[in-house]
Length: 221
Image (cartoon, rainbow, N blue to C red; front, side):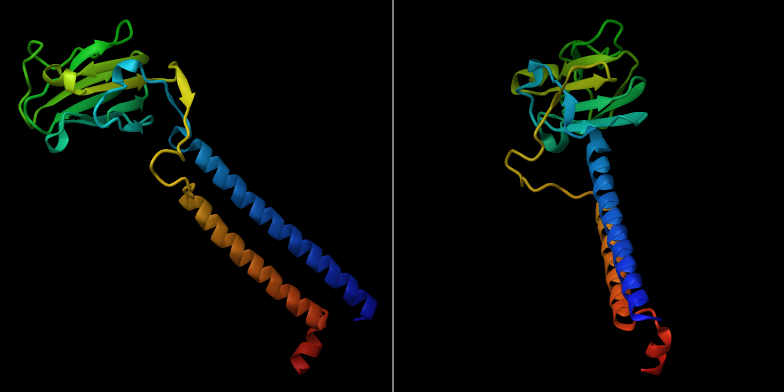
């Protein structure tokens, strides 16, 4: 192989290797962004009514895509519904599991035709521990509910049903937790694969630059 041909081959190989590395890195970044934006609703959440501003626990879960979901009533003896606020699809069944005694579930507000009737009995009749009250919510919109004996202590909750609800963007990196973004597992895997690809490209580039594509020289070295 001539000196000029070797130089041209080396330059072409390096350009191709650099291009492949850039494409792999770009694909990893795009995939990470796609997963971060698409998973769990991202930073978009329902705009919860002021009624639940003082709700105990205050936890939130995006449970869309599930046919049945569970809300624990009074876990660990608390005066809370956990999770407190949930987002579900129309037709999802919400199972209120009474994990401690002395509570009930009563509707506060719901869309016309909503199916949250509340647990059996009067306003202050409670449900025994271990029992379940279930409601299948077909009508889209915002539902709020409470435990009558403990409404004044903040035992309240809300259910957003469907896409036709007011939403807000929230800053998930603020608050008392760490502001460092969490890297999705898929993005980590793509990053590792990209690193291996870069290492392989650089290794081949070194080999090609040193021996100029003349493998006979290498075998005889």
